[in-house]
Image (cartoon, rainbow, N blue to C red):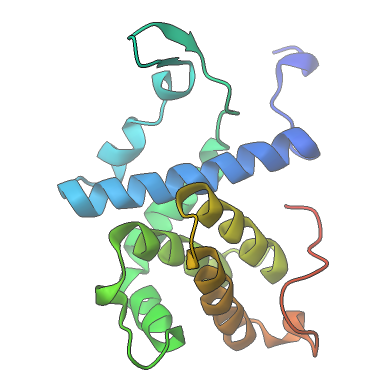
Length: 180
């Protein structure tokens, strides 16, 4: 393989591929919950053809304008949520307002919070502020109301519990470093 053919491992292109992986992971987790599909079955739907072409309303195929997701991150998040689901659901439930439980959440919101919580729990190579910021952006792709704010609040609470040394005394998630 020529050096120019290798996927980028850093920089803006990789950041976009990692964001695409997070978005795809949420879609796969949603699909798994709705259809009962296994992680491997849901992931197979994302490789390789899903990102090559898409059809418009008239059925005409076009090159996909979205970056191909980082396959390693996509698989890690989806499979990791499956492995750690009980612990993740307890954590998410504990970070929600008292009147809420993870079971009351809309399926897509639950998938999104599970994915973000998994990264906070296991992916110590990704800074807390990056996890929060990335999943807020993913939430904005799916929701136009107050949901991104809820994602920010829940993941911020979890970040403060799981990685207090990274959160320091600053509020919010401003100043996120580049994605890793």
